[in-house]
Image 1 (cartoon, rainbow, N blue to C red):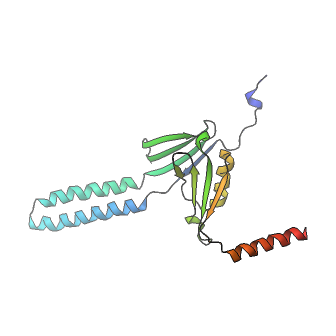
Image 2 (image 1 turned 90 degrees about the vertical axis):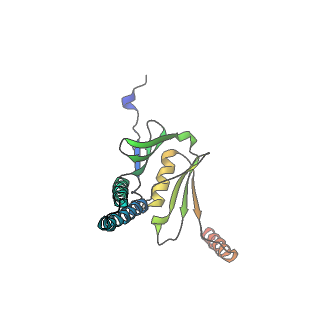
Image 3 (image 1 turned 45 degrees about the vertical axis):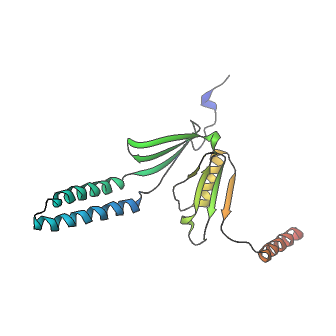
Length: 181
């Protein structure tokens, strides 16, 4: 007889990863709004009607800048529903789509310079697109956790160039380790 209360619980049924706001867009709209407001101030002194247009545009761009600070990208791995939910927006005003776990073929970790792991990139690989995960301070651990959670292979990609001499020394080191065993 099946008893759901005796079934072992998965330790992580829901994992939500959120990206920070797009500060480039926030600064761009704020600068554009500031530019239009400065034009409006100078044209008010001369009495031109364009001042009202610049005032409206400056206010509009500053409002868009303030709203952009709240808009985020969110990736949620929902274990109970067996899907990855991708959401972009703010609160109820968002664009949302989902991808079933069965469509994810792997997790790719692109490794960059060792001194800056925050620039490394984690992607979920599916047949139609590669879904980039939000940035993290612990990319190796997060990529491994995602691969284990999704039950897919983990692929590591490095931009480091291996020369034949470096490969020979690595093979020698490996053969010396196996001989000592």
